[in-house]
Amino acid sequence: MSRTARLPIAILYEHPDWFRPLFTELERRGMAYDRLDAAAHLFDPAISDDDVKRAGQALASIATQKELPQLKQFFAMYRGTAASDEVGVAVGSVAEAMLRLDPKGSRPIIEAAAHDSMTKEGPKARLEQLLAASGGGGGADPAKPTDKK
Image (cartoon, rainbow, N blue to C red; front, side, top):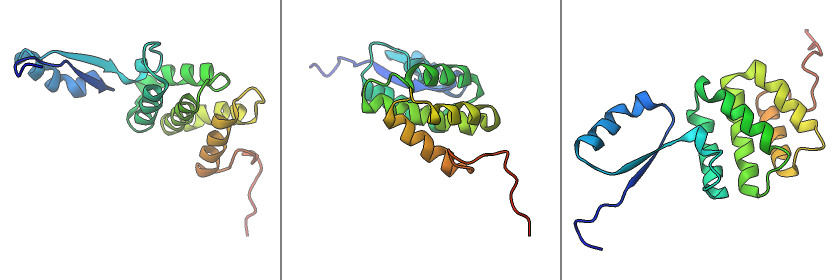
């Protein structure tokens, strides 16, 4: 490879406004790059299962309300059809993001999935862990009153 040849850069981003200064500087310098929206990346048929896993793990930390509809769609589509362990990990990571962004609205969805026989075993185990860690556990009845002494 010649010293003057440039490789394109791929930037996995979550929010375009946060990355605008970087994109502007790369364009100013005439550098080739590809923008990869993290949530949309989950649905790209050209990426590997490992890339899906990594995107899901990143979204567990960086996703915002803007991505919540895509996260819920991915969760609904893949919790019962995860064809590999990597996609199963992504399902668990997406559930983690959903609980972080919308605990009240997402918890019933995730509880139902954790108890649904159609949910694959790998994601199901991760969902049960998430529910237990976020309080109430997968099998607890959230409507049951606690003892007050």
